[in-house]
Image (cartoon, rainbow, N blue to C red; front, side):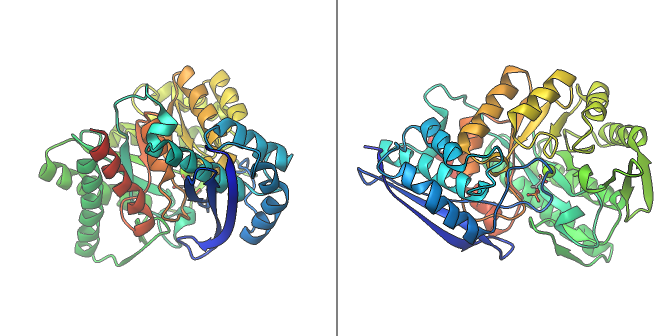
Length: 403
Ligand SMILES: O=C(O)[C@@H](CO)OP(=O)(O)O
Ligand SMILES: [Mg+2]
């Protein structure tokens, strides 16, 4: 029933207006799945390779599609993804592009679910999936690689950990985003938005902390449940390997590694941060381990550029005690199977898995299903903006269907 009979690949627009790859997978019994690859801006050095969309499509048509059509079953995800790896023949998908690979991988999963008549989260999570729903981390103020002339820290994240439901959490993040807008106006700080829809005012990090802290407290009072606060520092983007320092340009401050660890630990204490992503450079496992020693019992220290959803890099991190959670981005590694393997390895070693969008996105909602299927504590997928609300609204629908 799930034998693949057709795969179509096309270029579509992503949220930055760049071309990306969309895949349609059709099965013998008429099952259908469609998925699109997202795209990063603050990409990790060790990520799988994204090729220009037209090149990725041409290469996948030549090398991967003939091995899948009439040969593979959409219901057997591991088989599909093994074939994608074999068709590519490299470790980093540099032949067919991780963008083609992930679009086909996710579209096949959706086609498999369609044949079964099951929602994607059920197909991926199976009958023994947990009962929990992820807390959405809402990017409300940001800068770094996602906006010019804004904060050094890439993302200030609202984390409504006390929300009684996914729906309440989603609306709380939108309310914090709105409250930030009011506070910016009060302070006479005009602001555009960054790639993920977060406000991108021309302020230093210290002022951003003040504003987000106040916005979170205001909304907390309104909604009556606990809203935490998190960060994606994206520290690799501010790290200068030559001088060994983290350069905070908007504040004119430079910190060496020990100072960076102390600074982040201070922020965790001061703002009760529930989540800190990439607080240190992507090559510095030792510094990650030192920070995790210091604050790992208070907060999630999450590796994004550090681990790039890669089990080899995660194994190294586990061995060295670096971080206590991993960010999962299927396009960083190329297939759903690889993403699941990373999640499984994390879980087996007491690391939490946080599922994430990219700064360049489409209306694709696969990550919402992936987060529910794998019982992830958090999903990072923005607060507002169509390509972000596509996932948030899907989470609300999933919760509505599943309960
Ligand atoms: O750093 C990140 O976590 C992501 C998503 O927020 O950004 P990008 O997709 O640009 O890598
Ligand atoms: Mg990140």
